[in-house]
Image (tube, rainbow, N blue to C red):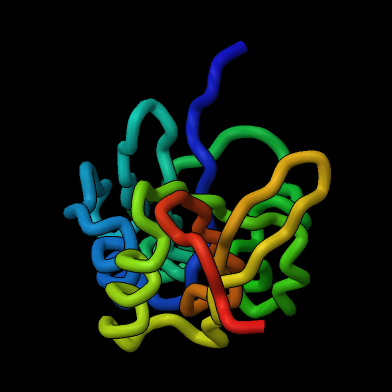
Length: 148
């Protein structure tokens, strides 16, 4: 088995593409119309699925097999409460510079300060939410002290 991609069901496709282009500091790698977008980054693909495309473009969609509400109702998935059980983790060389860049962009909801944890291995990180409430954790080096 190999990695395919991790994809997020998003409410606002264009807003999410813009958000991740800014966060990842890269243009979207590929799109399938307004249905699906892919960011290819060192072998791991983060993708965005437009929750409303299939409903709004039924004549363009061909399906075979049984419909499963839990997996196939993208509109309801997008509207459901995000329980934040999955974190998107991004690594950077200079955590302080990345923190400043993200803060300057003004797109990070509930941006934490840079924090430290040592649970078997020490690391520095900060977190924020994307437009759909998916948590993003950024970890990295080159950060030596924070105020107590």
